[in-house]
Each structure stands twice: as structure tokens, then as C-alpha cells.
Amino acid sequence: MHLNQKKVATSKSLYIFNTELLPHMEALKTFAYHLTFNENDADDLVQETYMKAHKFIENYELGTNAKAWLFKILKNAYINEYRRKSRIPPKVDLDELGGVKSGDESKNQTYVDLRTDIFDMTLGDEVTMALKALPEEFREVILMCDIENFSYEEISKTLDLPIGTVRSRLFRARNMLKEKLQEYAKQMGYKDKRGIKNKASSESKE
Image (cartoon, one colour):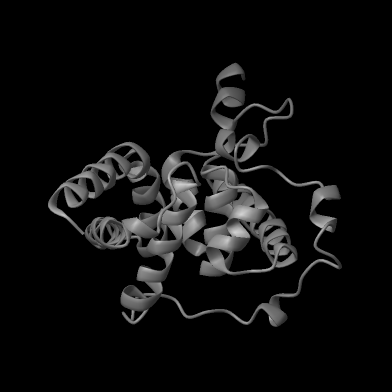
């Protein structure tokens, strides 16, 4: 490659890095934190993700899903480097936890979406505590779908899972999270928002 060609390639790589990859840093930090639950580890994981993305930036096609590409790099980095630490919970046996009858069944079930009712029930700390209590396999799919708005197909490709498995895990994760947040809400004196006000408000009227 001639010098001018190298300059063009470098300029293109820099453009891609700055315009396509860097804008997703906050989303990566959120995902990394909810994998590690340690701010320093999360920052290190994001830094490693961007270092690897820069190293292999020639593999990235301009205009494709940069966010999904970065999440896949981060997830692989997490598996390789951070799961070895003793504080990372082991993988759970999904067979023991059961599952839905089919991948499409989750679409027809009644559950509280993480993007709506769940966050109205409790404060941010309680959401974080509830997410932390979920097994990793369920936590990552609910973060990617309900927080980062990944499609089932994008999650499937990023985590190397069949779409049916993604749907099954998401269905179970949402219900597990709902149960945990309802417990926290009751401890705080809150009821669900369907016409029942919180305990403190009720007591003030007596």
C-alpha cells in the first residue's frame, strides 16, 4: 500500500471510529456495568472494547449496525477476561429454570415491560439491585432488549443464540424482574400504579 493510500485508509478509519462507534459509549458503559457491577471493571471493559474495535475496524462495514458490533466485542471481552474472576456468577442451568413452550409464546404473555410499568414502581437503585439478582443469561437479554432497544435478531447475532432462546429468556427475565421489583416496592410501601397510591400518601389522608 502506498503512503497516500495509507493516509486515506487512516482517515476513513478515524471517521468511522468517531462517527459510528464513539456515540455508543454510554450504552456500552451501561451494559458493561450491569455485567460486572463494578464501575472500574466496567470502564476497563469499555476501554478494551474500543481498543479491539479500533484494531479490527477494517472488518466493520460503514453503515451497518455499529452498536450490535460493539456489544458483541464487549460481550466476548467480558467472557474472556472478567468471568474468570470469582465474583462473576457462574452460568445457570437453564433446563432447571424451565422455559416457555415455544419461542413465540412470550409475545402473547401478559408481563410488565421494563420500559414502562416496572420503572414507575421503584427507584433506580432498586432496579439495579433487581437486575443484579438475575442470572447473567437473563440479565443481558433484558438489558439489550428493553434498555438498548435491540431487536430479537440483533440480540441473537450478538449473543450467538437462537431467536427462540432469546424470546424465552426475555420472557422469563421480565417476569423474574417484575417479581423482584414488586417485592422491593412492597418493602418501600408502594403498590402497583393501577389506581392504588403509595402507603405514605394513604396515611397522610387519614
